[in-house]
Length: 383
Image: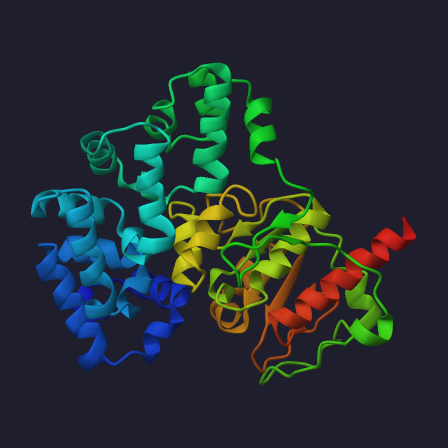
């Protein structure tokens, strides 16, 4: 990878840390032919290929025949693009290759035409000029903005024209009260979220009373080679800590875990603050989450709701916690993780249970989710 893409050491490290699954892919059967296909199909030079892979490392894990080739052909036909137009769209917004046709792109294009009243040529021109418009959420961006525009008698075409700007700027330009847009976005009961396992059903994340015997499972003490013994944070001690954070930074490498979003929703609902994604601040949090294995619909739907759109590489506040995969943690310089008040290492065989240093080890996101639910339940019971 370093030789083929002419990567510096820092770029290679970032690529592998963002998508560690790349290390399990075959060079001959996967990496080499995928890179060759991308470069040939999109007429990329070496710099363009490197930029695309660094932007969305998960591309290297996609099937050419069953995924990317079919999506490119669908985009070409659906938007009536020539090769130059198709190349422009995909190079400008590589995450398009990770979006579902049936569940993401087609519903949005139909919305633009049927709800916004735009012609196919107008939709094509809009997407070609700003392809990231296909990456915005129908639920949290397009539909609420259309609702408030209609209520205020504002031209509905502004919903797509201003799709890439934040809510505050959109409301200012459309002369719509921000409070009205927030009300439209929040027209659901508290805690209402779509569960990971369903595209249709909804879920309420609630913190119920918790029996200590059922959930107070202490993180198992584990040892780091050549390190002095550490005092593990266990049981009641863990429960008293997990509700104290004012901000949480999550490693996108954990995004493929089935408990990732459940844990995130519990913290957002009970803590009252959006989370941050660990990564380069110049990158996109959504892209990093998708690169870590998150479903694209979840990633886009929760942008700005559960997660801030801009990643962070440092604590965003004083009482900040870092929830990080064991593999990511072992590669971090000590000076980087010590800036956080608490570091929770997930998985692996290393002992990070050091109460004095603010280190907690848990076996899985499922264990962390259960302990966090108990922590907030304990807090609510005392209140």
